Image 1 (cartoon, helix red, strand yellow):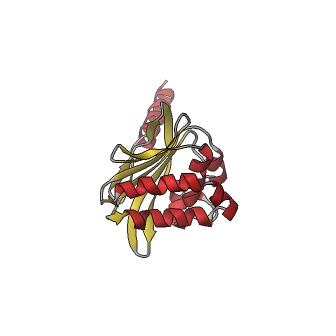
Image 2 (image 1 turned 30 degrees about the horizontal axis):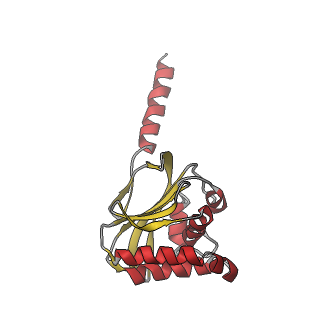
Image 3 (image 1 turned 45 degrees about the horizontal axis):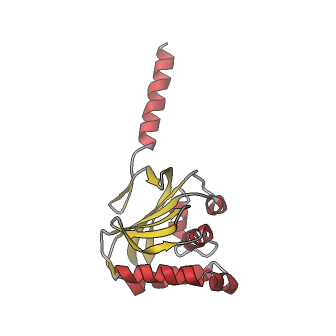
Length: 191
């Protein structure tokens, strides 16, 4: 009986430890999130560095955890990439690397096909004007409406249709040519 009780206590302790928020650069990422009524799990977290500057801490929330970029990109349904800014960044300086990441991970034909969605993404980011240190940005996919971009809980621009576009956006961070290799490792749960 004592052995069973010890095993249960150990299991409960392990479960409680795994359900703790993950912290990077002073930013806490909860172990789970609700998006569009779906329960998502924190897959991994990392920090985007550009030159020597830490730009944002990011966490990827998905229906099923995986350390495979291909498996994560193949998942369907609600998902979220959450960013907390570690410095002030104007809209053009933020949108530029996202557009570059899209181009680096897609063919010219794919980029041309996504042009309306990319234009909508850029318009939403321009509406932000400047992401300030501490701001929380979410790139979320909701099956009923598409990709929405929020800053501190306020949606910017209209929702962008197409699950394929959200997956294309995830390739910025998880693709073969990610924006930041260390950030990709972190989002895959290996960092």
